[in-house]
Length: 215
Image (cartoon, rainbow, N blue to C red):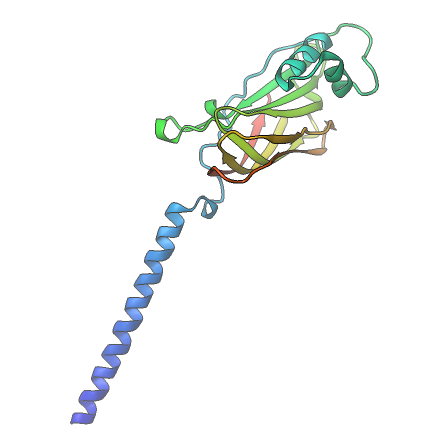
């Protein structure tokens, strides 16, 4: 009978230890998923809501806005937006879209994000249509926080859907280098890169996809 008692005690001990380690691992994974932004496939504070648009602009106004927001001369802005030279005429066929992080976050004040604004300088179809013919430039300006990472963007074949994916981290403001997004036509992709010179003062990750339909 004593042998059976010993066997029962051994079995109970094994079951207890197994349950203990399983519970501990479950609790650990739960803590990781709740505290680590990397466990979330998308940053829930990115929004597909209306992106502010300037309205129809002529080339001079588009150049002036690019110079203002990129903090460069109008001559440099003109060379960037129109590398083959200024087009003739004064048609209002351009627009500026601004994706502002502070306007596309949760309403909870403790989760507000202000990592800056992404600028899309575009050429549209003539007339009342807002369909985009091509993207002239994509650039960035930081807010009270600084985003460092990549922005990949794509314009649909009909020019009515703008996709972009933001992937990076947010830091306290610091020196950074901007590799502005190259021009891209319909059914083409482009990339903008923001590189930070020092990697401390990390605040939180940002990763999400936005699909914006142009009505």
